[in-house]
Image 1 (cartoon, helix red, strand yellow):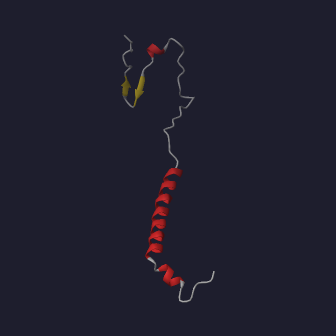
Image 2 (cartoon, rainbow, N blue to C red):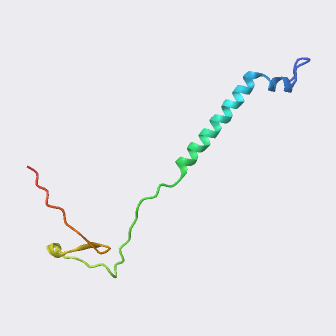
Image 3 (cartoon, helix red, strand yellow):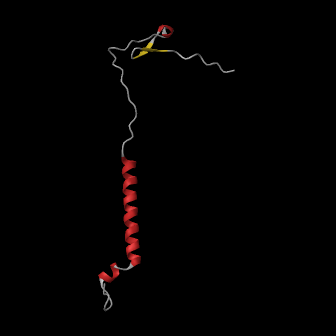
Length: 84
C-alpha cells in the first residue's frame, strides 16, 4: 500500500483513535481468555465406591433391622412421610 508523502507508520500508531482501539482489543482479549479458561476447567462431582467384598446385601423386607453408621455415630432413620 502506498502512503501519501509525509505519512508514516509511526504517525498512524500515535493516533489516539488507533491507540484506543488497541487498548480495547487488549482488554477484551484478556477478559475472553479468562472466561474461556474457566469454562474449560472440569467440574468435579462427588463419587463413591463400595467395596463389594465388605458390602452386606440386604434382602427385601429385611431392611427394618438395618443399622447405618457414619464413623461411630448411628444414622437414624427419618420419620415416614405421610401426605395429608
